[in-house]
Length: 457
Image (spheres, rainbow, N blue to C red):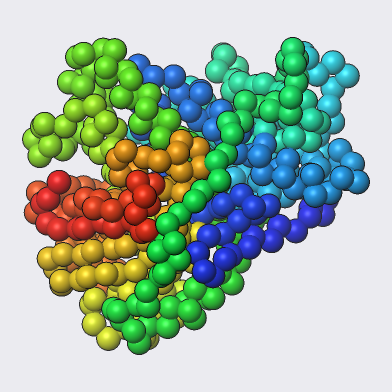
């Protein structure tokens, strides 16, 4: 394989934000990535392509175009190599862009074949065989990358015809079908990228308080250690660590997918009056919560699904970290009591690009109040949609609940096996912890806040 350019993320210690070419990037695992995509796919009344494929194309195009503008002397080959380097570094797979050659007639469909894919791997966790290819992010990245490299619009689709292959359906490779397209009045916005607004936060947003819980835990040292770990794609373009498969993903991919899904589902529910009843059966998570939250309608149904994605992320990713060798080598020697485990895992979270989190209040086995400065969900909402009229930090809400469930229901200190059955037992117990958001940066607050208590909506 040819030598690819090095990718060097930058972390702002004041905000906790990590960027590549000024594009915010964050860590998430295969469980979260899979569940969030299934949330979009499983509702038959909304179109998944504008949410999944288009969001990937927009954000990848924006990041790569930004880098290429800073390197005006680069050749097409240089650009293609950089695009593949980003894809591999971030753990998305091994999309072979560095060796790509544009066909003589690119308006005719041509193939790009991928042998390893994070989403192809993650989606194999489905029950039973998928009916259609699921590498929507891979396809969107390819569209955004080729459009940025050649400064011309490209389109594409996944192979879902008889004989077409995809890793997500159990095949040995994924086939992306691409073509160059023509637009009447090109204006530089060649993949439909929406305008990004400048985010203005209240002056108090910069006043991040010092920690008040677990002060003997060396948060700065933990952040430095996690940031220094070789968390980048291996020879297959995959990041395998903490018992999961990680991606250093575009923050605004998650944001666009989540908020576009929320809007699409609310619109579908308004158009199809009986859809809310049908959703309980299309989404197993909602079916479980039906008795507990029978009054949920409209946006609250969408929010419940997005919060559930946070539950799954917290259980698998944070739980995986707290079972890992690096955790026991670096963090556990600093811990004096059970509550210190929360201080330790929040220190790890503050290295993931999610903003700056603080434990504001902790009543053991009863209540947790989490605050986050510069939370990526709120910032993404402000960038793409402006001021919110409702709380939007769904991941923060779900993670907070899962942390309390891991500590006091699952006893993560005993290193339990984090199986799906155990997740159901721990996170879906009627006596389990649930989070509710009480402050939100996207609504104008200086920080986002989540209150976690037992059996509270």
